[in-house]
Image 1 (cartoon, rainbow, N blue to C red):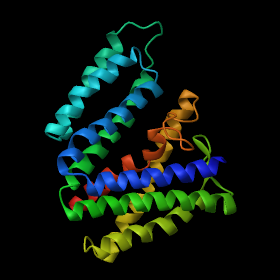
Image 2 (cartoon, rainbow, N blue to C red):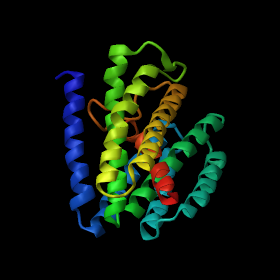
Image 3 (cartoon, rainbow, N blue to C red):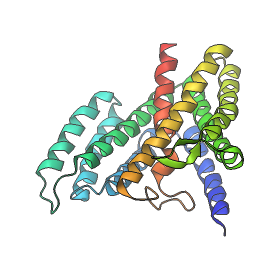
Length: 259
């Protein structure tokens, strides 16, 4: 099976599973069991990606944080968790000198993962909130797909060659051209926003997704790895699939709340 076939097949399976999880699971299962498994799996992948000292301790210590989050989702849990992890990073004995760049990269990506989980948890309770998230995710995915094909066909100017040599300016504009209308149609048809605010918010959503993608690419380049993990055939790890939306969804939610 070709790499493209693996990517398409895995993407279809993931889409069906996520659709069932997001729309059809009873609320208690959505908020507890499966959400906990997903958040823990992503955290464990991030710990291993960053090659944290004594990784098992970081993985185990994330469990109380996610349990507290499920009991009462609040952004305030994030700061004490980071303080605990920083203390562990400094004082847990390791054969190598502490790499502060690795820790702060870990803190950066985990913070966005946590904010993404918070946005999903808060918005899932209402129809408007769910439609907001669905529109943001569809826009980012449509943009990512369009950017890939437009970049391959027309890409000449590199967007950020030091971080992600494969991305082009033409691909980014192609992503905007195809991704923004997806969100606008989704949000205006659900009466979330009028068309002009929807267009502006959709543009921010797509561009923020590009920044999320570049953030993970920068971290992987720093670590000298191609994928964040090997969980998903043809795609790599969990963060390879959610790198764009973990930044785009929280920013979209925040701006929509302000609007």
